[in-house]
Length: 103
Ligand SMILES: [Zn+2]
Image (cartoon, rainbow, N blue to C red; front, side, top):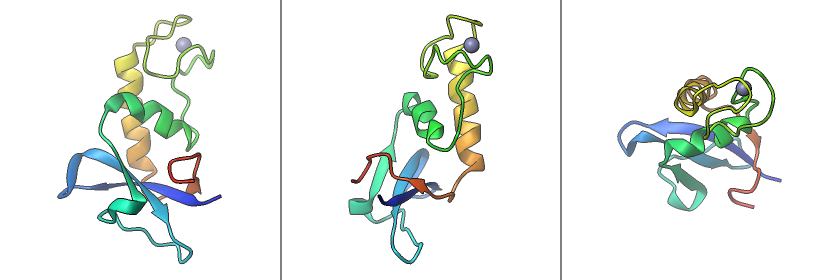
């Protein structure tokens, strides 16, 4: 299973996250289109962040994936999406197992 990282590229994709495949030397390139997936929709942030340990709702009910309001505690989806973005920003360049973006 390959390794990937989440990164940003303020010139090439200012508002997006990029999922980049890490090569055997531990390097990646945000401009290498073949080995990069652009995450354009903020609705994809919670599931992306979950790969790195993000839990969308602090009540821990698991009733929401972060893109809908939590039915148990009422946490708003927009807040969870915001939190997911902050979480991703704190994890840029951190390797994790590719859950299927490339393999
Ligand atoms: Zn909840």
